[in-house]
Image (cartoon, rainbow, N blue to C red):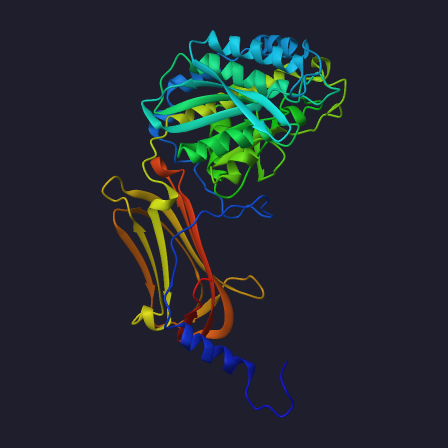
Length: 452
């Protein structure tokens, strides 16, 4: 509040504060930005041209062509034949034994993962296909428990059927990453089985580069429903959506689906991975079935042609991820932002360090943007007779350090947000790290507040 008779303008206080803040380095290590829900998906990867060369080889087409709708139907018939199978029931136990036995026939390494949470307990089922780089893991998952009144044909017999079919097909091939085919219990009680699984993986320091979750992917009533699939992810995990879009486009004649990329949602097991700072995404049918969580969630109300399309998309996406060769993690990139006196003679300086340069270079796109804090619009400066937007994008291979500096521009006085977004490309597609701060522009000065 400004007192009567005061002659000092509010902007003077701002400039004084910022002059002091300019002496403080606004330097923070690049961090992973996690959100349970993102209202807009503007900070997404564009990896349409970033898949490694062997990800589009003929074996992807060969694997996609092995998907069989009749086999998917048989799996769902078996699953719903156990009747309602909530976690802890005899039916769930019996279904788990059937699923374990089925995965075991694919010559994979299969084991139960027992969990307990308060009054609940159950078994997850894990089948592993060892990769040539066993430290990197990609997970494809679904949940095999149902609600108490439902035989679980679509929720989540559809997802389980896709995981089984993918396990059968991929078991005949080799990949850089270890592939885990995971069937969770306890999902309907609050993601309990997946939470315990991911918590243990985090404690052991496992390098899970991504989880593809399938939950309710077998219903399509209209032709529009049957031609689309939604793929949900937060900003950091959106590279998985982009890979699925590339697969859907490249093999459209075989798959026949359009991938609709949407923000992260929290109501399936992929949320457990996100909670522990792993990348994860969620395939969900485009048109929600009216038989969700009812006694009529059965094969009669499902579309096997559609489910086969989803399975093909899943196989192609999973293979593309499993063939990646990631050697850097988000923690290996450090973003530093300097303004004021610490940037002298520049007006500001952005510095990105590859802390694991001895291991690999970092192939990335970098976006640096200044926006008016009130309007959200990009800052515009006049250079000679041109208006120039303060929004820069670069594609770089960072060996050790990359810097960007600005000098000699005159800005109108305003509060700003200053954003740096780094996204991986090529073999570093899994990288995503950001840095945000705020500051003040005043003439030729750029004052950036320290990160608090």
